[in-house]
Length: 407
Image 1 (tube, rainbow, N blue to C red):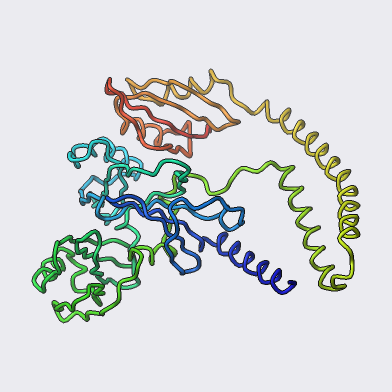
Image 2 (image 1 turned 45 degrees about the horizontal axis):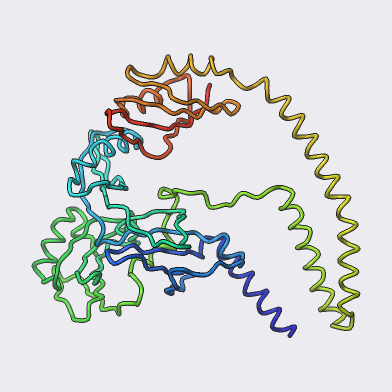
């Protein structure tokens, strides 16, 4: 009995540690047929039920939840834009996305700068329709939303050829990530691969190997080694997620909100529980359940006054900090005067929220790119951040949401 308890504690500790390190991931893989759900725990990948029952395991509370958009749902292009900030590029793509992908009614997009030159930049753009998610009690909250092409990477340029949704995908990638892709209905021939390699430009001569996940062998162009590998039961892209930088694709905070009192009480009871297990390991199981219960009850009575004292100290400190902070908060008139000096014509303030020197601003504008530029170039505010993407209404105005700090 004691060995079994120790084994479960050790397993929970390892899983919790993996969750904090980002090695415990839940992936919902969106395809034309629906959603498949996978669990990645320290490089072990397995498929799990779509509607997994709720769990109180700590590693599942802190797990990273990813919505991965499969290649069969993606539309891709590489566009040329003038050299500017990434915020401006995001605004330009948002304005042009319907023209770039006219086949999509309500496109969602993601982009990545492929290469920068002196006067222009090459930008990879992926777009897709929002996939239908299951009803009922399915967890629709994701921390990250990522197009599948982006996750591929390798220390040296290489190519993977694999099957997905009855199609054959050829993807090239390097240490910088995605380089290019090709989709065919049948196995690519040597001349098909040669044509694809030519499309990679300077990377054509740098490809060190081709990974073949198809059942049959492949001919090799340019004497590039072909490595025959067995396809797994999960999508190939899953193998690249743990080493992938997820931050640029975050749409929701990882950490749940806890009340300070609950955290303090939880820590104290965790210490009590740990002391209890240490006690059992030293003296064995000679103590009765009633004696143990009385000890815990006595400790709880001793801790309650400490908790009440800590709560009262926190309240007094909070009251002092609120009083001292009131004088540093700018007035709404002062904030509106600063915004009036910065914002271009045909840009209107619809809502303003002030938290100390941080402004949260909602705007209506006909020129989102100009608005982003003016705010970013102004000396009156700094650390300007665009929350979400601009939304265009029927009148042609764009609704935009910013965070910024007053100088």
